[in-house]
Image (cartoon, rainbow, N blue to C red; front, side, top):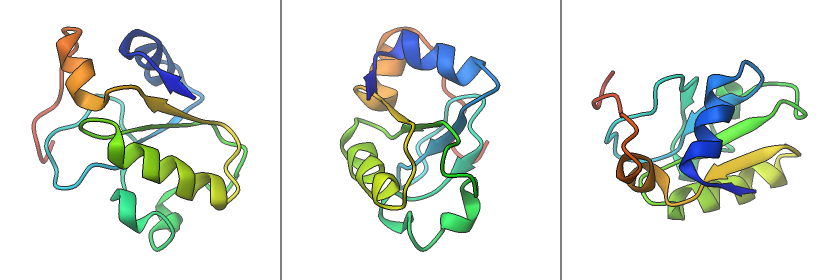
Length: 104
C-alpha cells in the first residue's frame, strides 16, 4: 500500500509498525526508523526484521523505486502488512517533514 507523507508520518508516529529504510547509500532517515536494510539485501538480512510476519512494516527509500522492490521481497518472505512511502524521502521533505542526517 502506498501512503502519502502525512499518512506515513502517522504510521511512523504510532507504536505498531516496524519502520525500515531500504535506501542505499545512506542519504538520511526518518526519525523513528527501526532498521536500515538495503533494498537488495532483504532476504540476506532478514534477521534484522521482525520474526513475526504479521508485524506491520513501513518501508521507504529516497524516491520510491527501491522501496517498491523491497516491498515485493518482503511480501515473498511472507510479510502481510506492508506500507510504502509514496515518493520516498523526496516527497517527505517536499511536504516540509524533517530528515535525520546520514549516519544518524
